[in-house]
Image 1 (cartoon, rainbow, N blue to C red):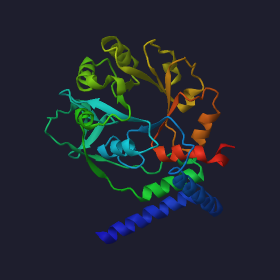
Image 2: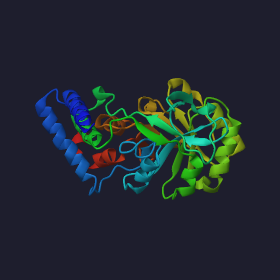
Image 3: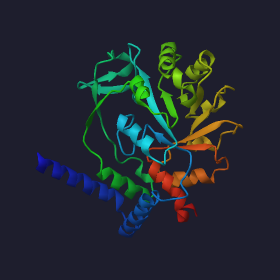
Length: 309
């Protein structure tokens, strides 16, 4: 078994190096820059501010896991933490991004599951360590490759976590953004969210890309801070004066008509090029928040002057 694992890891490493080393001098240069960024953030006085840990510290741990949330809480680079939630058939809110999970070797839709409070649902998560390589600079690739070597490349079993358990044990030293995954005006979802979160309204942000859901929840539970996710140009027309702010894709950020006293979160900034693109945008200011899987990496870019040129 160990021999098989060694062969597998060798093959994965070789494949990764093939992608990363099209030109050897760029590989060396990228490795040096990646190391510089990786080390400098520990002592930097110029950290990038307003960093949101995407699904917890998902660059280091499985997304929406207790480990990723705790790592984000402990990181000096993180200012806010975002997690994804869905509701089951029996009205239990769980942490998960996708609509389906691989449960007992069957692909199940979360909204069709019935889960008891004392039940542990083990499901399978697959890691995708390399994606969108074409938009990454060599220093990004080397940084991600170094991080990849410290993570498991196998399918991993994870326990589906209840939002109530997270909130019960959460320190609230950093605000929590609850990304509600729904496609319709789900009143039961709203009621259960309020039951779990109502004692922490000042430190909770509720966001969704379903405008109908957000619009209705504002009317029923007006005391929360609400964010609307803008994924396409057609979403730009949706407005509610009681929205606290907007979560917007980087490509659409330049098209936003900025409103005073609104909060803007830009996703997902995981590379030098995207970070610099954001900095150059005429709308960029200190009220903009950066959503990233790698808070330490983006945080450290504030001290790498040559990358800003």
